[in-house]
Length: 239
Image 1: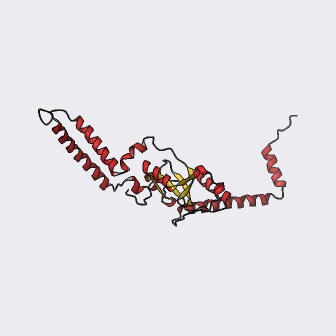
Image 2: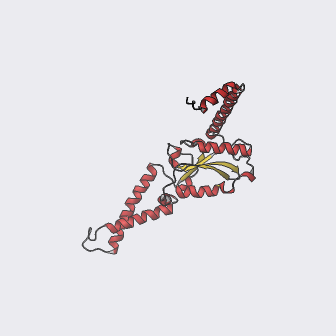
Image 3: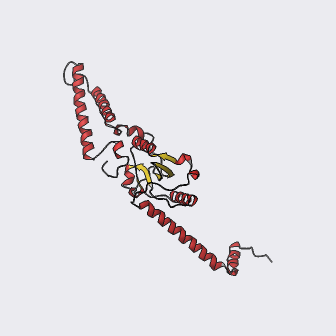
């Protein structure tokens, strides 16, 4: 006669039935889940709070030096890549579970409740959902911030170059001049007169410069665009 194989799950069920403290275990699990739910709700609430928090009382010796950044470092990257550094309640994307987990671990390690979260991300993430490279910070004080979590895909490798014209007026004018010069070179010789000359070239160049400048100015005013240093921490949409 063949012996019946042992089903470990059935043995576990039987052991739990015989254990008089099973109900206590279930109650402990329920309490633990309830606390986790309350913690999650509290963190989500702090992420959406609109009151300004200047600092959190971190235990400085427990912080990783690599995660500490001054606001000037953040501003430089924001200006170079046309990003915004705003309070987390302006953020319209989803905060990943990994970020929430890191916040809970930091709170447990430092014995505090983190508030005043800020996020560094492309402007569009503060208006609609997307997945481009947001970074979550918490204030330490004296314009220093602690990097908690980065998620999403990395920025396009050419983004810094593409955003270079928007850093300041000089860069934008240089771009318009460069484009005008290239477009002028594409105009066939003798198109406006039988003989080409340097005077004719510069007249065409000036005409191209005015046309392209007009388009740039119209685009800037129509869409309410501004230069990177003016928008990196701006709360307004049309920037």
